[in-house]
Image 1 (cartoon, rainbow, N blue to C red):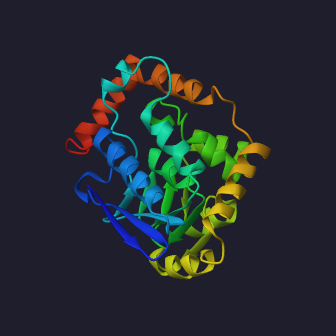
Image 2 (spheres, one colour):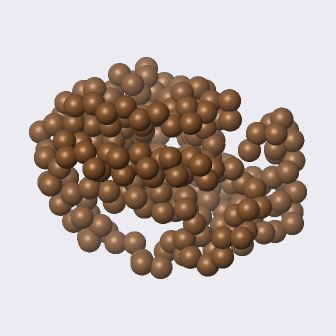
Image 3 (cartoon, helix red, strand yellow):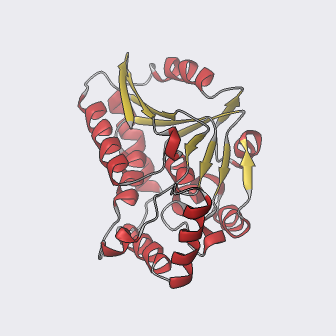
Length: 244
């Protein structure tokens, strides 16, 4: 499902479940968390590059009712986004193809977003009665509160150029992959301790409330528990031939 390839000063993490649109489920979260742990354990690693195979970068979360048993506290998806944002490594999302719903959050939580010409970004949760509660703080950090709010209500789709213009992505090229190597070369000039210091300072100057994880998780679960939302999700799965 996830392939990990160490390289000089970096680790490449590739989502490899194109037949299921690289959706996020429990196994995905465990594997990606383990990949981050592996990268952090490598003394020479400064950068983690997240990419995907297939037409979708990531189609978001596998929304089954098992989430409803999560109880209080933070959901694993939120903890993953927080970790991407706060790890002492530079996290880079190389997006070729569609980033949808929670897939947008996965990209936006990274420190840098590279968008290929085929990249699109769309928060679709409201179309099914959901709130993109966990992705929204990271999207808003990039594009601003009002822009993120509007994009949520209208389910607006951003192509690669629009994503750069709004701040949702940092660079665009025919493919995201061709932007990765030049970025890795630039990042070699900054050592790991400095990266950690800059990211720590950013978190201090622009803090998120300590209780935010529990708040966003509960907001998501409250909507997912609604009968009409569950019907919408069941209809969507049938329409996609059983895919989440």
